[in-house]
Amino acid sequence: MTGTIARKMDKGYGFIKSDDMEKDLFFHAKELVGVMFDELTEGDAVTFEVAEGPKGANAVNVQRA
Image (cartoon, rainbow, N blue to C red; front, side, top):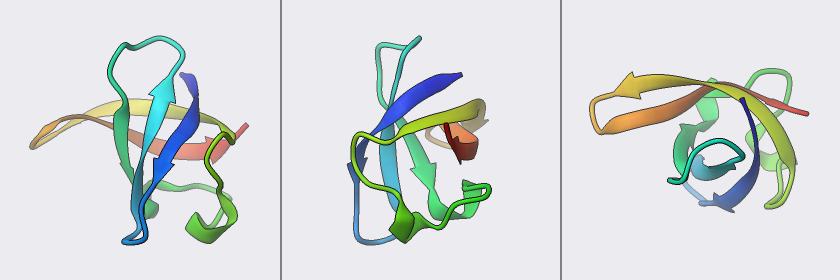
């Protein structure tokens, strides 16, 4: 899937605005591939997969597009 970084929080997580889903997806820094959390900025294009977590859908395998 594709989307953009919508919000980035200081504690190592953030939210992705998906091109295909209505609701923003949570992501954690440990799910980043090939990019460090500090290198991402709001508005960056990313690709990712969706996985179900304890609180709903999460973005995993997040990469800068």
